[in-house]
Image: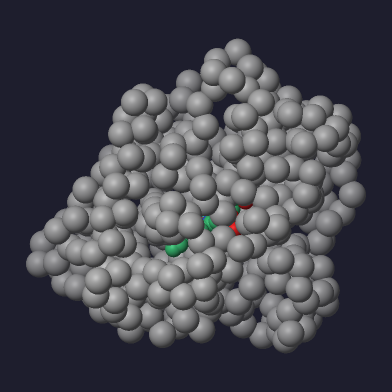
Length: 440
Ligand code: HEM
């Protein structure tokens, strides 16, 4: 399967890999081998396994001649292990709690409505370029106080950082983002506002919890981690909606179902489909595989989310799997071929870091709360569980609501689904464009 075909539809290949076993060794393009985790239970356990490290500096220190991650992202929480990881994460956590994000909701809605106004002025649009891209960029830029004039450049650098581009381009983008954030932080320090970046600067300067380089890295991580992923959630979700007239009508009639739809779109088409990186610090056994010390383990949220041992009819979009109604204690019983039954919703939901949910098992409607322990792995799991998940959920819910309400006659404007263009990146899956007619 070539990379264009994989970008268009990676799921047959991921399913074929999983059918050989939940943890498989594969040969990569450059002739090396790597482990890929495709089973849901194995992926969830790997994501929280302290013997699997994300400390890329440590990984590359033992491999002279190999390049570490780009400097602007190699000092972040995403590339460190506990306990150091907790120190880096703690400072940013407050800005992204569900309560903090709920306060942003009116502004997110206003941005989404402004974008919809611009679309409404015309009969057709590219939903990716004109809605799914600018919404998350505007939101995270406002949060961090990135001026409007700089947003196109920030977008280009972030894009280059993740795109399957030449190493030089990645390095240039990483340096440009690092330099940009260094200057932005220096300027903001002279004139602190009420944005997230000002809060981080004040917290650092008061308590000296972070080095200046760590602060720059954190700001770069926040600006890049949040936008392309959220763009793909909105783009892939709109594609699922355009492919299903009944689903569109159901959500338009009952917007209370939107949070469940967001969860199902995350599960069905994970923006980070292929891989999150880890390496083994000691020999471990996972899903029947023996992984040697130093070997790379790629955990695939996209594959795990479609594991038939965890989700029945995993290739189908079904809101109902996220809606707990009268009998949350009686989940449906998916049966995987030759593997033990694992229900979609075990009885005690957990918070991402292993704390028990204070509200007990969810009853009634789904809410934008912490992960259920039987849910998708699109935001990861364990100590590195996505910090921006509450923000991404709210942005996507508002995006779908605004688009469905403002454009009830929205229709795809492509000759066939196969004609759609997908972005070719190393880790993510998302549409490069989604042409639509907006109707009335
Ligand atoms: C971590 C996915 C949106 C900030 C992660 C991880 C995943 C993920 C899978 C864990 C990686 C691993 O364990 O190796 C997503 C998806 C998003 C999204 C699918 C949108 C749909 C956001 C947003 C922000 C953000 C909006 C911030 C504004 C972060 C940060 C981490 C992270 C800071 C690192 C957490 C840590 O290492 O402790 N994300 N993300 N993400 N995400 Fe997101």
